[in-house]
Image (tube, rainbow, N blue to C red; front, side, top):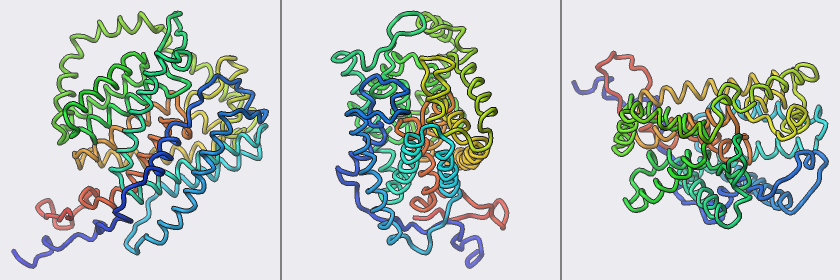
Length: 434
């Protein structure tokens, strides 16, 4: 019937009014890469050196990069404020993220190393602001494109370093063999699994020769990394793809083949992995459980509500448990020890809201962009739960990219906006935008 409410445009969908149609300059892309990479540590450093405000050439490089990033954020914040239209809708995720950073800022006053703590909070704030502004200005696809290229460059850098400067990327494993981990450039298991996820989703339309080049690059580095967390990430993403069957032919084929082959090769793969890694370490998460228990006790004793200073506290208390450890080896634990119970609640609230939005996205849409966001969410959750940092680290950068993509998605891609329940029943049709 003509003229019925079913044919009227839905007011739930945001008009497709992007902030700009420009592409990022080389300088913007370079800054994106530098913040994604850290920049790399490039040398071993005593964890206590940062607590004592000791500065070397790598610290000077980081100060320059993060200073430039701060200027970029200030300039682009005013730019996006001018370009924002009245139709823009707010999102709870950026608001909660600002609250998290504000609460962590309070921990500076309780820290035994306030300068170092303040710099880490600053890095966190700039990472969040940069990714949000970059995504709002240039779009989700451009953010995913630069995340893919950044992980690709870091993976290639790990490979080159393995032959030229092996001390930067190899460490001794629990069993005494050399493990290709990439600590001083970029963790191999982290950048390779993020790159592989993007290759199979957002970048699945690459020309065949480039697709196979990156598939071999990311795949081989992921296998050689011996990072069990990354293996679980990829397995979980394949499982989600096998259940949902997204509109990505190559991912559907790879996921189906992997799920069918897994029961046949699982025993062989586990045996090969156990030959390089201690199987019993799975139960202690490579001593993380003991470390977390020690850090929780220290926080409960000295600062349970507002913490002991973001990132600085674990540099003090983690080596007391194990001299070889200098961080909490979990973003969640880092938040709790640094910011206390109050800040942890804010962080968990971010994950709850983000999980709900990603879950709805998974069940309502199945395109490349949407499933890439879902898969990156899985990577961010696993990698930051068992390791990683929320700033100056690819796993944390991935988390903020997911936050930005979910927040910006309805504004820049109204056809991807989550559908509102129709008041006209199941038969009502809702236009999906141009």
